[in-house]
Image (spheres, rainbow, N blue to C red):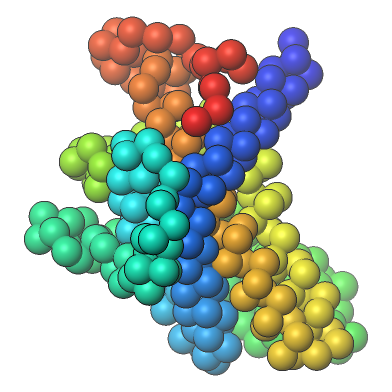
Length: 281
């Protein structure tokens, strides 16, 4: 039974990815430009010592929420971008990453989400510093076995905490900015939905890791080659994965699921989507 459920959710993740690609191809100029801009911003911020991770945590929710807003508009228009509008769409793509600030009702949720994100990352970094101290960046050949075990345990804990942060935001953002739901309950709903569809979301995570892995491999030969490869691959994978998450949001939050509270389940009118209900866009 567990294996059957695993394969079912694996197919759901693949279907989300296919739908995300189809949505991306409705306006590849806009989304490709947004992906390239995001890749440049994230790549530059990552190079800043000490503050780079905090700045990424500050900017990432704003950019992802803005991408969701553009995806919602493209989805509702249900048309491929005409040829004469391709260049204007490409030119305006960097500004679209700040789209949450064009509506005064979105400013407070955007700032709150970014503050929550950067605060969580700061607390995680403080935890790492308190537990392992300088051993986190030390040469492992100079560490004893107990310290190495502690560093590995803290690294695993750090990864889990970052995953929980991401899981709380990926659906809280569209719920807040597209459906005007309160932020805090949306964070909880996002966590429950992410837990329920962990396997399906891992498919999307695997695609998201491609530019990071390729960039790291290329950086071992040349730093500039790694950065350029990250830009090229990231300009496609970042918006495609974002579009896939948007498609998963539409599938999940238009139906009834096990992760929903009982009162929400009674209000919903559908069951968990199977492979037939997740049709291509």
